[in-house]
Image (cartoon, rainbow, N blue to C red; front, side, top):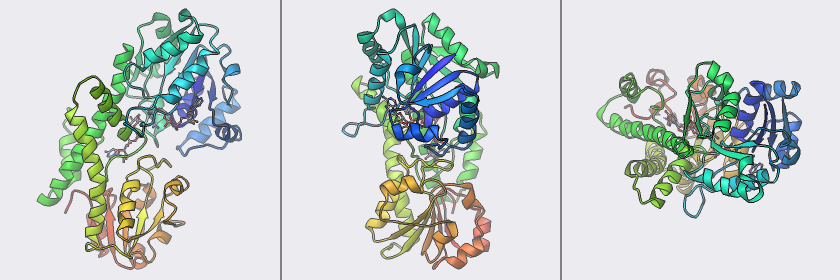
Length: 434
Ligand code: NAD
Ligand code: UGA
């Protein structure tokens, strides 16, 4: 099947290349010409494990291509996916749908045969109708059907999450559209993964409910980790102990510095805005948002108190800047809240991240960037782990201790074992364990 993917970011690019790998003919469109030029030269615009190889393989097979002009790509396409950004609107936290609507306008101008227009972007309930209205302005109603197909992949594990999802959700009740969507996802269905067909509005809400529930799990375990620390329990064991109950589940119970990234923060906020606009209150989701904001601030104060309450003129070596490991994405990373608080109190920041330093430079021009973890900790008054990159787990702690000016390690991801750090005589502060 010929598929057009509008938006070649984390979701569009991964989805596009995976569809090509399933045997479909895919053209990825992006209005950022630099991105398209880079992709056409084999340069990936994002860091995502396995992506470059899969793109190369599918470009070589002739099933995947990149362009900035949608008109030729649409010729003969049975499905067009909208995978553009839906960031938080700065003024009020609603999802900003400007990119979605402008993509819909461009698509509308080029529909000739019956086309399924699929919203892959995360969009508030009712957006499907808005897209329909836009398409109807340039195109007759029997030439298209708008379908919701939210994406659940995680950055850093995007390809395996896409190819082996827990489920695929498709929001449409239109028979022809159902057949097209079934054909697109046949390889996933053949692998035994459930394909759930719902109404379009239900599908739109599933996406926000899923992200908000996962964010709630994280905020819950973070809250319990605070208590755990004070009462002498170990949060990893508490998480395991509750997670082994299949009604709770073990995943997404890792305590940390607060959730970040391009989705949980904006989607929880957007869900609250949708509810407010419909006169419904979401006290649980609202509490999660507030708790997560406070969590990041608390983490800065945890670092300050581990250093005796005063960080002025102290150098803090920060390992990890991205919002999680295996990505270069800095959107809403906890580092963006924590580091400015430390700087405001007079601390100097030296940082290293294996992939996110180029992105980080857009936000932090006033920190020193190191070439590697050891270079980062040399001469510092403390080492702070902000992101759980594997490469930090195996650091030679004896070497770390000898490089640090003072042997303080504040581990906001619990990547080190208490025993190992104790053996090296480090002053170690972690999350949810005393
Ligand atoms: P992104 O910012 O990485 O990519 C969006 C791309 O769309 C950009 O390259 C931009 O240049 C392009 N674009 C914008 N308007 C365009 C237009 N009119 N025509 C062509 N290209 C256009 O965003 P993302 O992280 O891929 O997120 C996309 C959507 O998917 C969002 O709604 C997000 O909430 C959702 N989502 C993201 C993830 C994730 O892990 N990042 C996971 C699931 C769902
Ligand atoms: C998240 C969801 O997991 C995806 O299902 C969803 O598709 C995506 O948002 C989206 O809609 O964009 P992602 O943001 O890539 O994916 O990353 P996650 O692995 O979910 O992590 C999000 C944040 O929560 C990170 O800051 C991470 O460190 C934190 N986290 C995650 C924890 O603190 N503890 C955990 O146990 C899990």
